[in-house]
Image (cartoon, rainbow, N blue to C red; front, side, top):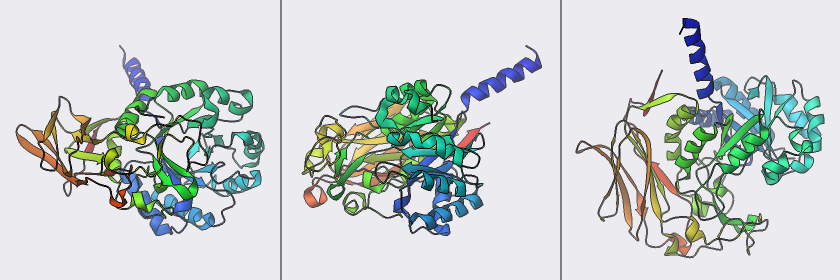
Length: 444
């Protein structure tokens, strides 16, 4: 094969292997008080996890958002970070077209705004009933828009109708959690991607979902369990154009991966306090490198684990249902069948180890015997272990050639929950990188 053909083949392979950007969903209403310095701090944390940008969930008619959005763009431009808008049409909407146009004309052509082929990326949270607004919005925005809404309620077939898909440049699927006592599937993602064809498909990835906010009419659970690892494997299978992590800071729904620095909705502190999710970010450099077509080589063994602090049977569920189904609390059920939340969330410890070489992972709960899980390959290796009624601190070790290569101790599992109501949120943590070393390096 000639040199030209070899180069052509290599370039072709690289184009197929590489993918797009990773954005994290930010609830602007939780960060209205953020200064430029606070935004800078959060952006640096996101960049350390290889996140390319934030997509800002913005409520209609919220004058309080003005200053924090301005501060976010100032910080993002200084740090070479990207921002985009997700206009909330369901929870805090709908939007008037002139307000959408005004915001996009002020920020759409800013250096920090995420663009696709030169046009600012624009998304929504629902709002298909206002699809007729978007042709005029597009025509009124300087430079146009690249419109990728989350009209997930339509389903792929409903979205395919000419009056919907015809006004968009793609779709974002909010359908990223399993409905019931089973694991997450990528079937809907494949269907959405097939439906949008050559347009942009943005795929959602989330670590968890649990909410118990009676004053907001919300109290349900969807299975998280192994999902953080499973979902990133599905990203490799689906190969979306953009990945959106849901979320950076939605504490009320327990799927935050950012630090707990923003405002917590009233009532959510009962299941968010002392329940960090920062460890989920530790796995992102590896997962994102895989998504971008790189070949990550783990330079240092690392442990990440997450689990609930009691078994499901340890206390009252507090009116929480498995699925957003009709109940005394859920004001806006989505038609799902109710499932026992104790069946949805499995009583297990979930562990992902980043291994630099084949090895074993031991998991011990309290003073009970440790259980060994052996892996024959390096990279991100995932496992889980049943609680089996055991209580006490969770200790995890990476063992290789008879020696401990990494270790981590997690907060104790309790026999009874505080306040007698089961917290279906998870505690997340793990081992820290040694000073002066990176957890991952990436081969050329």
